[in-house]
Image 1 (cartoon, each protein chain N blue to C red):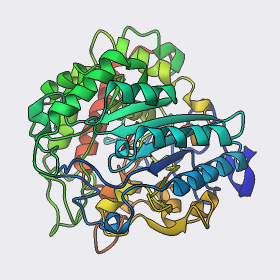
Image 2 (cartoon, rainbow over the protein chains, first blue to last red):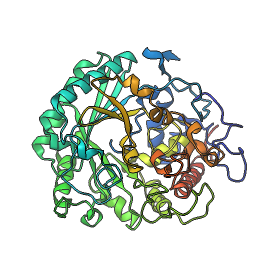
Image 3 (cartoon, each protein chain N blue to C red):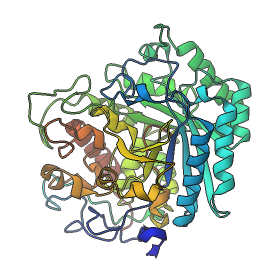
Image 4 (cartoon, rainbow over the protein chains, first blue to last red):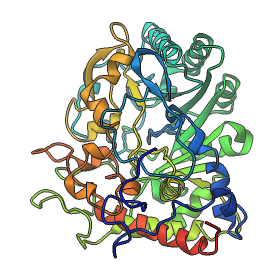
Length: 65
Length: 414
């Protein structure tokens, strides 16, 4: 993931426009693990190493585990 | 960027600041990392909504019921060849069908062992079998676990009433046998338990459904939208006669509503009661990370299928679109998996936003929704360049999760 879609927010439409999603790209993942939100903390703990994983380790086939 | 064999890149995702990649123009293909082997091409059940046997594709009829040993051996050889060529450190081997346990545990174990023996020494093979659970016994589970095979099960909920469409060929309910198998797995072999796949039925009570699945103690769930498209719509959605509606259509969202009800039960719990793949991959995408799902996002699909006769095929959900939709003309006896990487259908699944309709490319949800599942974009007169038939539901779900995530992280340091 090396290219910006536009002006920094998710989505191909106008960043920051009325329909844009909240911009969560700059959140510090380690900081999220310390929030008082148990489910978020556990999810982020699983995701912390994902940015460094090679693409071929992301297995997306939906009809199996 | 590291380069593997055959001019294919092996690319680690850059660290933050996270930026979102939207397309693949000019980029080398991503090698396959997930190999789905149809060890058996028939099923002991006849689920009425089955995308393989009740859909438009009929290729299964002319194929052998079981994959012969020679097919499985050659498949293992090709997987190892691909792993070596691309320096893969991890591969996923998915034993699938039909109902893969009809092939017999010995055959499944032999395939898993052969792949493990043939891949390079520094490559780890992660093997799972996806079963309807009706043929699980204590002995079979133990044997699979002994050979390093984890077990995923397919159920439509944790109650008999959720599984009334999952019947055998005589119309008898599968639930007694399936629930027995699920309980065996949960109670006696939890380490071998991969999780439960459930197809969403918006007529069910979502919280009751979710809690009934929790009672089966799965480490993970996935909630799958039933396969359908603009020409053959899923139940409860409009279909033919209307132009594909993109984002902001305003139509009712029965699937989106159902899913966010489950999300709102899962999200605020005192601890993560189970992993829910759909929700967690949505969160990953919202945080700018790549995702491991076909349901959302723009990440390249690196899965490939080998059928019971050795044919190399695209991901089989394509069969919900039209007859022969998954065909490539390749097979493991005459071709390598690198040959499959060059197939236009495979390339389209790795093209990111370049493969999407204009409405999707302009959508503020592009990098999270990603146009949803590829097969759900199909329309007979123009192929797959449409928004998802579930577009409005996906929009509902993604915006809801984004809002909840934003609320939860409002005080987080940036």
